[in-house]
Amino acid sequence: MARPSRTRSFWLWLCTILVPVAPAFGAPDDVRAVVRDIATELPSSISMRRGEAIHLGVDDLVFEGAAADFLSIEYGGTLVAVSEGMGTVRPVRDGVSGSPIRVEVTGSPVGSMRVDGAPVHMSAGDAVRMRAVAYRLDFSVDDVTQTAVWTSSDPEVLRVDEAGRVVGVSAGVAVIDAWTDGRVGRSGMIRVE
Image (cartoon, rainbow, N blue to C red; front, side, top):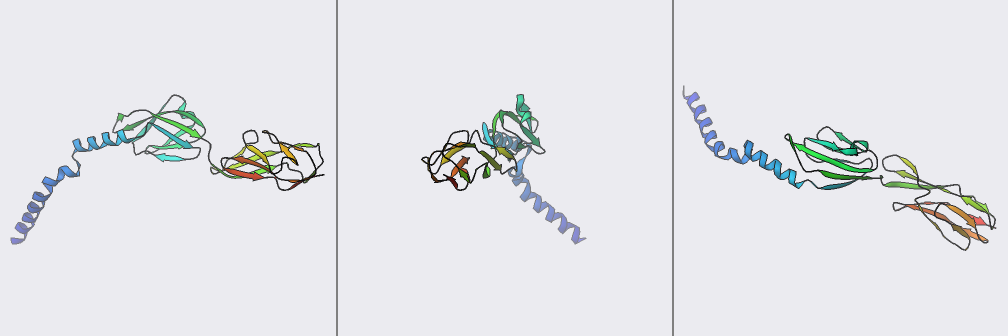
């Protein structure tokens, strides 16, 4: 018989310790206050790259306008950037809708570049169009010929315009570079005779 009373006294002792501490662990009113604090900490705008995912710590996100065209919402409030664009999503936590978040999705960063169409030899006065190809970190491949920054290692030998058109100017050797997103693609040595 002594055993049950010892067990009961243990539980009584434990309750006297835990009951005063229980509000610190989060009664329903305290949880709602914490949720409101988290909701106010959400950013008003987010910039993402294509292929990137961000977990905002909300129950759900709701599209506003055309955001569904370039964003995807995964289970648990994870936002996935599918393609480039700009729109708005609204976070939802415990059934309460929060302030809208403006989301801008830009292209995925470039992992590497390649320049196609570079001849080994050219004559002065010859023109050739090169092409710049970007290999992005989301495994997409883009023709960036029109948006790349084109440069010549020696403009007195080879000139290049903003569209990748290369003209042989005089005898010598030069290299053509195409720059996008901090990455460079090189043509290799081109000899002009």
